[in-house]
Image 1 (cartoon, rainbow, N blue to C red):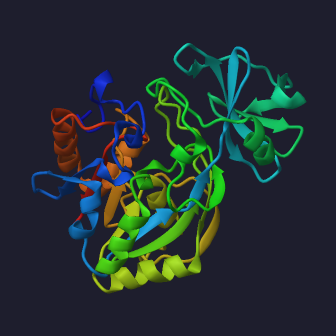
Image 2: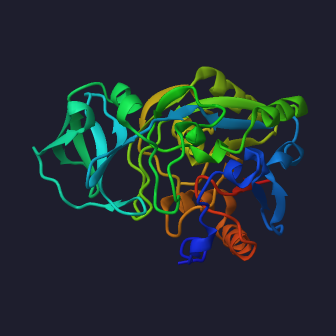
Length: 336
């Protein structure tokens, strides 16, 4: 297995707080640029307009983050994904001094009392770590009162839900922030548009990622609007880049792409997993964070960047002390 897929992440390279807590603006985080066989270059995210060309298109995820964690005395329940029948996928985690860790307990039919006199019923396991479950009231309304943002142990304290929203967040539904777009600010969006770079939305509601598990993503709800499909096709026909802001945007676009590489309006559930074998038909660039060793996201990055280029980029990020995770630094991969 290559370094790009299997490497040791030093504990000191996990971003433990938002950049604003370190006296920085969101767009002041570092940005590494990978472009084919060229050596990676180093910038700040605020440099993005100068790294793209007029006519390029950035596709962003407008999903807003829910306060999806509900804490009990000894357990936390992470609400992941709403199903069409009204049930939800949830992850049970044991509370620890730092945050939480996977919990292997639970039985089909078990009832868990939650704060606010709510009751969660476990129905059946959907994956080794996720349960299909039913809450006795509307989940999103309940979470707005009793939930907090999901936090893992590398983040040392709770931060308000606003810290987990991007400037594009308008459609509630994600258990965890689509974090690749977090460094965008209104000022940076203005600079991009002034440069002639387009911005178009998709929606993909992200489930829980649980850094302890290396497993492929499961089905997630998505929508590619007609306007976005039209703008993507126009950019490609004109020889411009289509840059996805995050792996979620890649997943939605590649799900909606036909065999001819054209994107059609689409909505529903996607199980599509981008790998080097499946390749990409639409996306020619990616803005992303730095991902955990052996994660399925790295297979997607390999499909876009190529294995050698991605390995070189991650060696460079480790050598230069880039910060990982949702509050960390960023990586722009360009195919051309």
